[in-house]
Image 1 (cartoon, rainbow, N blue to C red):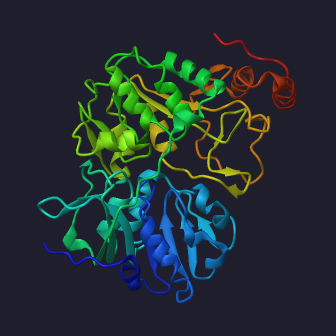
Image 2: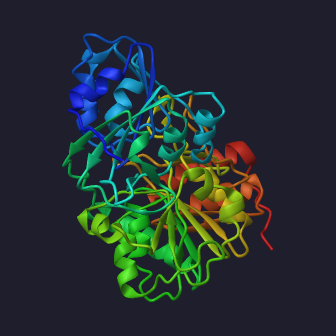
Image 3: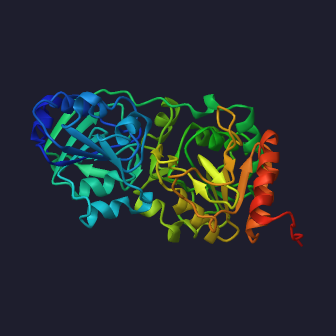
Length: 431
């Protein structure tokens, strides 16, 4: 079980030109290894970097690394956005639940995996910590694994364990985890959206929460609910706050009753300390957590997601602004569909009615080049700060008027003109 530790500079020397390298993501981004790898830019060519969201600095995406590293992103985060939208990178649209198949079935065979793990226990097992998601299939298939053993990484329960004997090299670090407080971004509109969604959530519901301020806004209004459960691809501090009210018991979940099930977590030290060696939390890969067959087994499944733009028929764009790649497909469709199939489930699309610059996010047509992440056939509830629209069972004309009703008041006239141009002025009454 003895493991010889090396420096980050020594550890990354195993990486060669023209190889494909997986980088551990989210709050588990292996910062020390990335810095050491970037320092080798002058001696490497065409090293493909594969990851989902990474947090903090991404030196491999710096313009000075063009030709040395190619960022092939499976979910576009802010720190690689410029590179992905240039010759220095690319974007792979794929459901989060299926990324593991890219590795396991040889579509994207991995030469090296760079991971950020907890210190080993007495038996030599480290934990993938806050990010099991796609890291588990990556470590199972990569030919070489390089680990930074991080004394700040929480040890999480679930199926994210790896034995130190699997490491080709290991580096001891004390890299603090990223501190992200989504609640600090809450404004009046997010709180109104949260209040509307809270009215849709029944006692004994199971919640999935997307990334951002709106999910935390929802959690702030659920303190008086009873016996809520959590089955989600990710969560942040808001879940910890709601646990402390006693509203979350996970008692009525059919899958993993009594436990919060997730694949990754991003937050502050409050969250990281809470999940450390805590059996109430169970971390699994996204192929399992985001499997619609698993999701639907929980009754009253509530899926809460957001988007960049939504057209008047209910088509959702969540990964691009026109043809500019901004985010990713992620797990939105996995959970929207899973909630729809759940007994008493509710798929919810939540968004601010306007952009920061005041443009309407509810539009007659998606921008040219925009991708449809969630189809209009999958969308049911849409929530803005101006109300709730239920599109289920409604024809396109009816949907358009429902969405116009919850648009920002200053944009309603233009939207109605577009509706009349497209569908005419007659609206069949809803019985």
